[in-house]
Amino acid sequence: MNGRRKFVRDALAFLVSISAIGGTLKLLPAKAFAREAPRKGKWYGFGVSVDKCIGCARCMESCKTENDVPRAPFFVRTWVERYVIRKDGETIVKAIEPNVEGIPETAADREILRSFFVPKLCNQCADPPCVQVCPVGATFQTGDGVVLVNVKTCVGCRYCIQACPYGARYLNPTTRTADKCTFCYHRVSQNLLPACVEVCPTQARIFGDLNTGVSVLTRFRRMNKIHVLKPALNTEPKVYYAGLDGEVR
Amino acid sequence: MKKIFSKMPDALVRLLVVFVALAILGAFVVIVLIPKDTKDVKKQWADAIRREQAKPVRYAGFHACGECHDKIYEKKKTGYHRDLSCETCHGPAYAHTQDPDKVKPVIPKERAFCPLCHAYNPSRPRGFPQINPVAHNPLKPCATCHNPHDPKPPTTPKECSACHGEIARTKAVSHHVQLECTTCHQTPQQHKIAPRSVKPSKPQNREFCGKCHAKDAKDRMARNAPRIDLADHGEKYVCWQCHYPHSPEVE
Image (cartoon, rainbow over the protein chains, first blue to last red):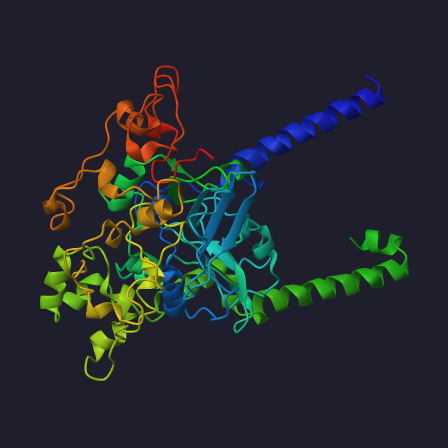
């Protein structure tokens, strides 16, 4: 056997055996790391009925109060977008401002095809891109499926803010660390509802444990046609939307 | 061993010694000097979870209020605001549950508060009660007429627009502005008192719209109405599957 053929054969054998070892021992950071819902214990999820949201921004207000989010309008853990879809196909999306009574367009504006509000928050992905990119392991997923930020180790590099396809993170100007929705982890662990769910006047927001057989969230997921945001990214979001328009990104 | 060293050039041996010393120093720093907490990510995460759980709660939750304010709590249960948490309007009240005398939740009395939910906005879902804050009893605080714990119109409304404001405003700028609501909807008196259990009628067939819009319609109001031939217009569909009667799309 000549030297070149031997080299090619050995190289191939090396690659195959290395990938087999890596695959069985899960050494390679592949899909093997994606979290699936554990059989036991809690696995938190969230439901949003788009048709029920009235855009009153009580959720944004309560979130800022409960979680000490800076008052300035561009620091938000949850926000509500107003979609206006015009007849010419143009879609206008604007995050609403709390406590500002907007000047409503008259019903006479016939160029508007349809319009609605979409509440948004961290999707608490089962396979979160923000956790993958954190260089110091400061952001992580808890056993019950909530993605948290460890403020003690976060260096504020903004990688996770860039990596989040939903724009759910921001840099907190006081702590200078990344900050995001925690499903109100301190409330949830005391069996209270997250603040936004608590104050939502129309029950457009629903919170629950995806592992329970009977709950508001289970019923919500059973009785509605459910969609998640950007499913093609395989982040496996745990915020489920009912009545979501195709224009919503 | 000695053989290998003696075979090596002197400079290389010295270099090796330096490298080994550096490696030992590095291992010492990593293993001994750096505290264990900063290396153990699992422990850091557990700490982070503990810190997160220890954060103060501001909103007490919907059950807490009923323990003292049972009368209002029971009253609210029967009205349209039954699904609303007390804290939606009164703000965070956990501090109030801890020290009821010292900390008082807000009572939003100003007129600007209720329209946050109830001002007309075309993006709000159809059927949600909305008013025009400019035209709806200007300058009067909402609570003078409506009890926020059991909201309903203070008097039996004379006009349909008192409740169906969105439809009224849509109709007001449409070609159907001249039509009374009762032209198309027969409304029993009882509907004003029990709106959900007694409902007004709705037109059932194409012939109803045809009274004005058919080729041979004789209605006096319909002199200038656009005419169609009921026999070949719109095929199997009823009129309101294409035209919204409160704002007919035809130009």
